[in-house]
Image (tube, rainbow, N blue to C red; front, side, top):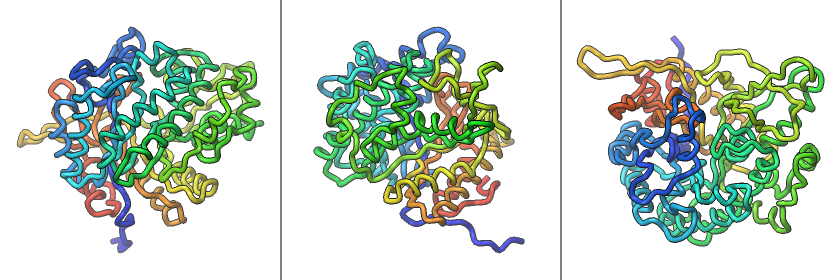
Length: 477
């Protein structure tokens, strides 16, 4: 029998879970909410699995108190949610919609009443459609509209939110939305994608400035990036990795944390755009001090230089809708990776998380980090017990989370300043282009009845959240 001590996290370590507004809220046309690009995209035939939309989703908007009690029952120390911009400003500009602000005010108050730290993300992809009609993130004016929105929300909630995150995964917003066509608004233009990269970076910097002016409770400020942990293969592996690292990672870390764009990124994409959308003073605006850098990690990515003759592999983990999220690098191909895989087809590699954290710590040693998303989709099945209650046995997800938490703990031991870990996702939800076909939640949602059922992974995580120590797989079930 093992006598090894359990791996424990520091008392201040935030153990939480995360969601996004469009994926769970529903109530898409209620209480003054305007349409977002995801409303438009999901209602466009052929864009999402089965034509699924976020019109109802997990109906969180109408089940707020129930879901808050659910979070409390799991012992969550923090909850990362996103605010729907079109619920606050239906057209992306103008005075706040009082009912929209009231919903998030009740959410924040409900969290505080349950001793759960509120972590608010201002943008998780639901751009007001009216702003997209004016060019969306390709339009510089959108960054300034976002800053105004940040101020409106900051004035309303800036006495209570503990951590503000400006953007969630701007890589997805820019490259999947404007380059690949796989996310809303569904455009396929490399130059537009790169313009969106810059205007999202600019929006972040402007929003941080606005929040700092109006918040009163000394919160922390952050941005969340989905890092690509890259593996190179074959001749030219180093060049393939360099190119994709520039597009996927350094296009954000360098301006956000160092106030500059990588010269190799500008050179690689010179045939796509001249970057004239970067104006004098922009980089200083973008480069705002951050209390936390949010890290989203799910899988690794393997790249190599394409030989130009064989069929080019495109296994980058994202839905193929005809466009490319990699402007300026058509000579790079994305190689299928060995399993095991999740239901998304993403490989399971906890070592990649540790590598990423150690690398970020080495490159930005004074920057505290927080894992803002990590989780996995698997095929879940509800079973009915003899007493009529329900259960979901998801040993693959429990194992996935266990191994990734252990990897995160190793990074802490190695000296990484890691402040928290948010499991994605609290509950099953609308998984963007995949509709309701993929389940990431530790809580199962029956979309017909909206019944919530704790999966075994939720029971396992409850023990971790309440004790601060990593349970063995099978614990808490």
